[in-house]
Amino acid sequence: MNETIEAYLAFLWQQFQYDWGWMSDPWMLYTLFPVCLYFVFFVCKWTVLLAPITVPIMVWRWPMPKQKNLSEQNNYINN
Image 1 (cartoon, rainbow, N blue to C red):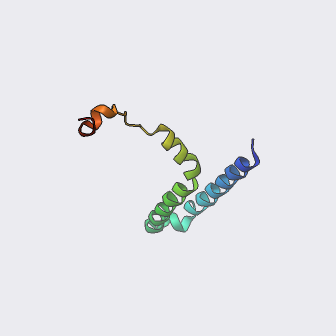
Image 2 (image 1 turned 135 degrees about the vertical axis):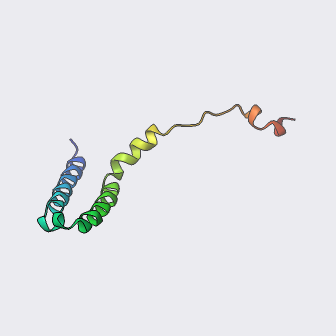
Image 3 (image 1 turned 90 degrees about the horizontal axis):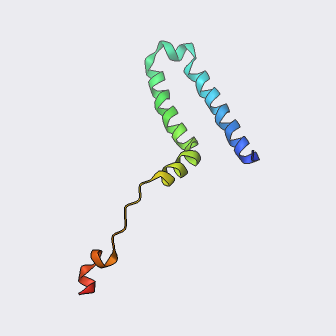
């Protein structure tokens, strides 16, 4: 595997362990408000961290509209 991919996956694993540690702290679990705030931060953070993986997949799977024939689409030009 490429060094860059290995480093990226190691970084993601390290960040996941850090977040898991924060979410499993007893003082976070006793009060629900910090857990909710950290969960919002967690979702935003992981959206950014996973962007190099998810954005190319979304773009690749994005539905492309079918192109109409230009003569049908621009009828006023052909007259």
